[in-house]
Length: 124
Image 1 (tube, helix red, strand yellow):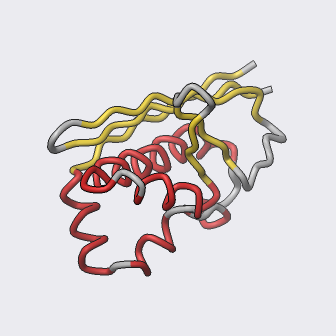
Image 2 (cartoon, helix red, strand yellow):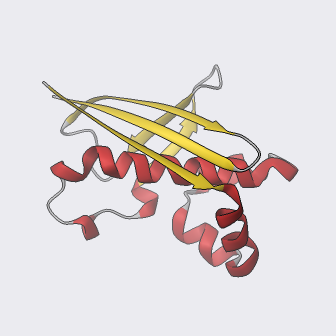
């Protein structure tokens, strides 16, 4: 059994600027349909939620980077953050189809200026 973790922090303003300057092309390149729907439903708070999901993607990549042969074999949309029935975030690595992964845990937080995510992967 092997455990790996990744962490990422990002300024919310960077994601907000990308969305405001690049619009839907940025959103559709980076986020899945479920992530877009979730974040856009947050109204004025959508930017912190988009930033948090971006941080999850970066943290997850760091946690799995030793297990992928080529960093270009994974895309932004291969990592998806959703919520369980209690609202707790969960992450899936869609391109790995959990072939190597036993369990993934994620923790997300954001404040006025920053969003942060921690991803821990338990390998089979």
